[in-house]
Length: 379
Image 1 (cartoon, rainbow, N blue to C red):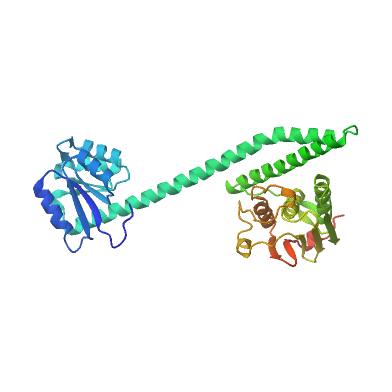
Image 2 (image 1 turned 90 degrees about the horizontal axis):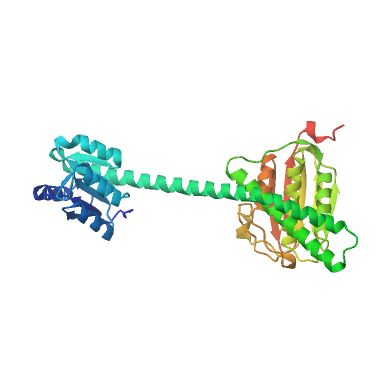
């Protein structure tokens, strides 16, 4: 329990010696002790019942009680109330038992004959603080373990889904190539192919996300390549899977450099797919490639509803879904596409920005730096 600064501490004293009870009560009233309410019981059983009935900040536990003796008293109480900070009260002859209680989870121990108001106050304060720090650490560890298990599960599941999905996509492609399919059958197979492609992108995004979050990052295989060729190939693939949409590519320079072609294609594909999802059917998604001396840029623009300004600040965070009109009723993705695109661009030492207005639409600009050695077309 975290007690507010102006709230008295609730101290549970488990003690059957009435002289010791009177002494502890007097010590708790001393000026050096924080404001406290003393709750007194005489047995371990009564202590467990009291702590379960109301919140307790600290426990002062005698090791010689009517229903429990020595280490058994601590073990029973700590087992029933594992989160309660316990300070063991002991005699000179029981220090070995007290040390064993510390090893078992007690926060501190005090020898009754040596207790002073200041010593008691310090022991209770430190016991509460250590207990809170330990509880916080356990919560953080549990949250981290849960997150890691969740991401490992996603990675394993995504990997296992790739096999059957690849089979579906390959067989759909073979059926599309057949010339004897009727119009109705062809439309059905095209829908299967598009759904498989969308699922494939989701699985790829999940795998990339889990690798990044589990510390694997994005492995880059840099080779000399032209951004114009990459963009052209991605646009052709998307036009094939979206025959009802228009994707316009304008190239001002070939954009030669040393990059990971597959990863850059993934960035362009994610940005175009995002544009298609958030723009009306009758409007095109526009891609502009510009070639500069030290860098190249790719701009992807859609003319859907503008993004809420408050959302722009977090648009590259994982699981963020932009609430805008989805063309053709297509379902939203997982909210990972823009995050992964951002991470890939950062891995290349580049940057990605976004601007969105009602008049000009939403534009994502990717800027990839290069040097003189990689900026020229390879021979």
